[in-house]
Every structure is written in C-alpha cells, then in structure tokens.
Length: 127
Image (tube, rainbow, N blue to C red; front, side, top):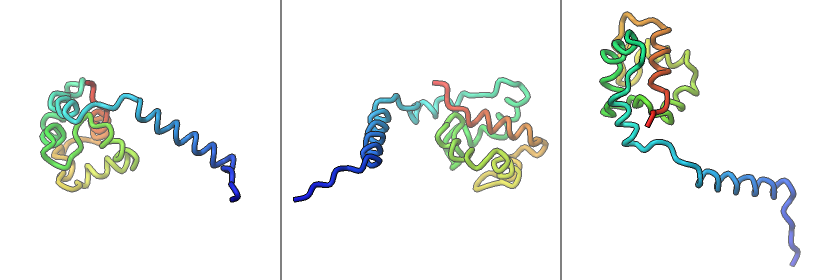
C-alpha cells in the first residue's frame, strides 16, 4: 500500500485550522443574549440631544427585542449590517426598511444624527 504524505501546504492549513478552532473554543464568548437585552433596555446616548432623539424615535424597536430591529448593543447583529457600509445604512433609515418607517420616525433628523444613532446602537453592549 502506498502512503501519500500530506502536501506541506495542506499540513500547514491543517495546523492553522486546528489552532483557530482551539483558540475559538478557549476564548471568552461575548455577552449573553440576556445581557444584551438588559443593556438595550437601559442604554442611552451620552449626548442629551441625541438621547432625546433616540428615546422618541429609536428606542421602541431597538431596546425591547419585540421586532426584527437589531437590539442596541448587539454587536454581532449590527456588524452584519455595518458590512454594507454606513452610507447604505443611513439610506435604509431614510427610505425605511422592513418594519422601520421612513426616517425612523425622526422626520427632522439629518444624516449626521442618523449616523451617530447607528454608531451608538451598533456599539457592543457594555456588560
């Protein structure tokens, strides 16, 4: 029977993959779903004006987990959206998307405010 040794590149890939799996299994996991929910219910932007906008326009859907809206502080859910680019996310707010009405219920908000709100909500929960 002829044995075929692993090609050096395949051997390296096997080692790298194994190490990645070991590290992933040993690294601390992110906040629990409950911790994210708890954070989302109480988190507010530090800027008073932005906090007011958040409370009247965003909080109802992004703090309670009762809709398809990503929770404030759920970094994983927001990262998938941020991969599309901030411009695209702001466009989605302005146009409305899914259950979110156009302008996210903030008809007098500008692009900079929408971006600041998205950045606040996308920041991973501080647990």
